[in-house]
Image (tube, rainbow, N blue to C red; front, side, top):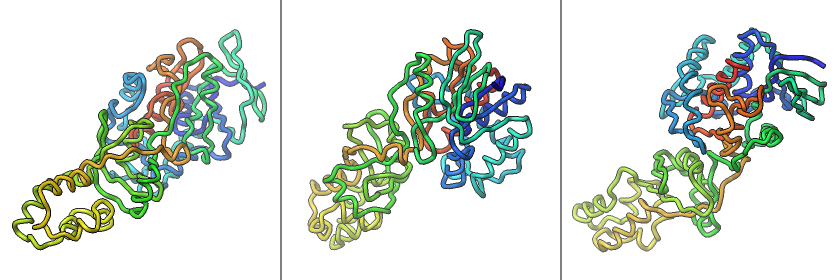
Length: 393
């Protein structure tokens, strides 16, 4: 049986970062993963360009039943620390919207950087390996039985991720380990995910598939202003993905398709200046023609402005600026970028990521009940939580 200081289960962002930091402390480190390649989700992230962090990391942009938990790790290993690592490896990157940082070339640059750092400090990575059993020994060590042999370690780190994108190898493994050791699991669901619509709405909206509109999407708790994207099944785009993490089944959402326009004022003004102009002609100056045709009946759209009553103007504004819809559900883990819920953070030390009741056992990354906004927040949580554990394992 091979005896190792630290075994990390999961060769994703958090696991690789933890391994690098632990090995810098002269700990022997082995990463085990059931996939045939390390960092698969890193490679496919950000449309293949990896949105690796954000200039504007704030702890209030994370969803957790313990909103304070993420503060310690994020303050000790910041976005600037990771950006410095990226610069050290001379990886070209650029800012998109809202401080989001992407590689100029491809995601492989970030994965290659992490693997290079692992190699430099002697981290071993064993892929295509299934964990069969984890056993806690009386001397605080662990015995790991796997499809590729048995191992013995002092520190065991679970970095196996959540349930999002099962085609990338996502599994409930980490939650099962947590349950084995008596930890609470908050119910999991897909986050940062497209929303599906009820049949009556889908029939009407499907004609807009592929159209994007700058919008505000909100409920009683949260609001986001970015593009929404109409799809053949429902709604996607940044504003919808962000909102999905704050939406619950059965709840309605409100969409403002004209966030910076007082459409009643615009139409009233045009009633005076060009009364014979058709309603749809004016609205098409502010919204894609297909959107106007979908939200405004043909008969109304063909009316001249002079013939439209003040009451009708208010109804038009409500349709376009206070569109109430009740989503049917989400696209699920298949397309979700993150898993909401997970291992209860109250059971974990926010400083070390260690389990309070089980010496030597650690949880990092997405398996924990910490989920960030779209835009590099989840990768930063992976880097920060992995770094924090790496200082002590």
